[in-house]
Length: 135
View (cartoon, one colour):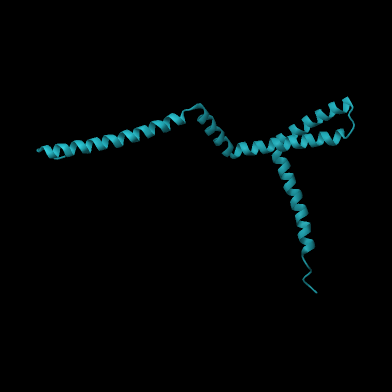
């Protein structure tokens, strides 16, 4: 920076520094508001839930648990039928609990078995669609 020798240069330098101070003050206020909003408990909880929702591991676990509960409930309904005896209700609840745990803990094996079954049925349907080449 050049040395200031006149009053005009001094005023210009003061105005320049005041403008810079004003801009820096605005930037500091914006940064403070961003920091303040990021440490609010509600925003911390929302950000955490958003991160959890985007996690593929949690989505897979949620899907596996949901399928487990669904199959458990379905097996209970099939077992109990329309009879409302207390013993059948108890056995249906035990069956539901067992099927739910079995499906939830062995999802990879069930997926593998299901994909093999689908491939088996898929290969037969493709062979039936193909026409003989020698006519």
